[in-house]
Length: 421
Image (cartoon, rainbow, N blue to C red; front, side):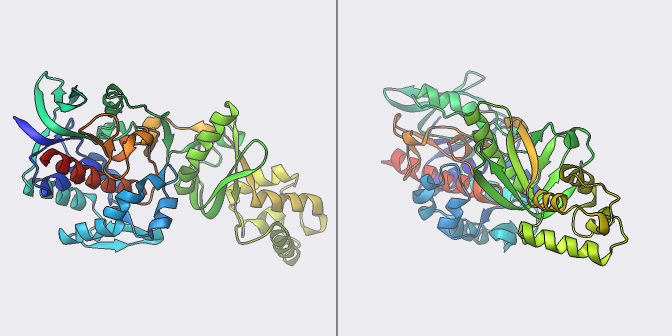
């Protein structure tokens, strides 16, 4: 059997590509190597599925630091507002939460996955699951079909590769698409983990004394070897048995990876501002005043009203302060050092968890070889790419899934138009 469009990958990008291609009237085949469509989508947003982000276009692009500008054309055609309308038209009520994150009112990812799969079926798309693709077939400078690992070949005018990256491999994202792209002449930019926890060999990490300590509304900054700030993110984080995790640690991870590469390894300094609303001098004065008001108390007991108690022994050691000191014996230089540590608690980071343990894959099919208006290959007629297989990556918070839906829709519509011409 021959198809107008074959979509490889049943995730966010592949499902949307199948819908968009079939809407144009194409005969579409959707292939997935797992036994369930939308696996990664089903665990996204903590199992609630953060379908998009409601921020304005320019702000949305800023939250996709990995080549977000490439998406301007795709987002202009099918952006966050179109994604919201798409789901609402399917009867999926959405709600906006903090920082523009959009979730189904049901708080269940299954609601979103089922709606997408039902829409694919309603459009008459042929679906085949548990069918790993071995290779994409090319003939005379264009796509001609695909070959399954069973040896079966299926003809198709246009092929959309939407198989994801290498992160979260248990959902089916194992990097299959990169080899198919290279066979068509494409280059793959270096792959690296993003939105991934940070690792550290600091003594207070190895001892696990801080494991499980959560910090809210703090600022995490990444510094280069010359002491210049690279990036800062404000929000929540957590100390783990191996390093740092939580939203702001994940957001800083790609900058740590790049800095480690530039410096040739070693460690990268990150600092935690525990008191973003104070300057160093203000925090010095505030805590000194508190100690004066309770001048008979050990300063450790005074400080636990403003700083995380479990962090105090490490901070006081860094500052040269004895925990049992009282106000009358406070050395002002050491107290100033404490204020500086509170504003920039240092952690030497030596890396991240693996790409398989990351939420998002950095790197991918080189965007210089892709038409941003159509997601078509510039090197092989009939070949299209969508989603995380491309060298595009954003922060968590609905940005990556927006990129997947947008590129998937664009690829599906464009591939269908080419196939039917």
